[in-house]
Length: 418
Ligand code: ADP
Image (cartoon, rainbow, N blue to C red):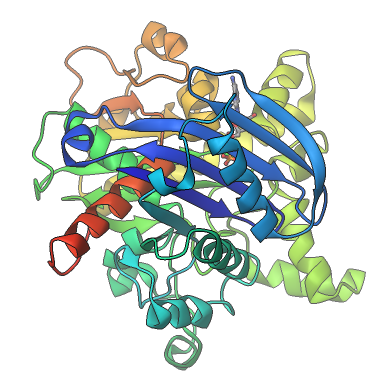
């Protein structure tokens, strides 16, 4: 089945056309036929498009709204010289990345009016993400009328967290009245990586004893403790700001700091939000860049602030890994994913340094050699095994979409993806 996957952000649209079905998903041979990005929607947008086996396209033009961006994607996918399908009718379903599903959505679901209302109910909690996600959905519904559309939530994988992990130490009425709790994000990535880890270990998918830690380290970073395929705890919280140090987000900090700084610097809430989301993290500490690769280069060239930023990043990650080994009562395997996790051997080594006591060790040569590919980086015979696992959120969205559409077609109630 050919599935269009859309990830619609406030001024960008990522799209992929993937081919998947039950047999190819089980064999791991399902794949993307084309990938693309429309960036800077609302102004002069840049379109990048990479079809499998054909030359890439890069163009720029005025694209003022998401519907035009989706239309442009469909044009590219069907263009005789660079297209991967003859016409739109070959697309059988659309899968959408939806950032926030609140407590309502514990699995991926086909989108109908009620689901749409539920996604809109979460606008308050994800004002920057859910509204553009819905814009992408409406555009696809208008341009591909009659096709089934499926919502895959960043939060749903973490809905298995127990109350002790998701509650904050604030008056309970704030949870009851305003939904103030930890939700966690990057769920699609953590679910994909944990399923790959389970397969790499040769363990059954529902093995209740399997204890895994997955580290998604991209521009946004989060880490999850998983037992028996269920998320027990994760580092992002009410918003994607909590937890690990990130490219430009602070991660954990004493909440009193922000009250203090708002008073001292006379910041508005918007300015305070920008301070923590856009000017903090690796960028804030180094004063140089939010990009880990650049910071590692600068550190090697003797830049102290770059070193400091990388040190804080690795130290925070180490603290979380150790805490999650405690949450799980031990560990069978850990995976590094995301641009940093997949490529930065030095970050992997520095964040595991000192955790030998928990059985976490790296084989230096294997670690150095693993770049952007699935590979074990722990030594032969290790009890706690460590892997690099390139993540693929779009593939999982396509698989969920396929599964739900296949169930709908066969008259079954759509089965909750594991
Ligand atoms: P996003 O979260 O936006 O999808 P990515 O997963 O692509 O981002 O991760 C981006 C991060 O990965 C950046 O900090 C970048 O510097 C880092 N990265 C990519 N390649 C390397 C590399 N070879 N060495 C170190 N860091 C890298």
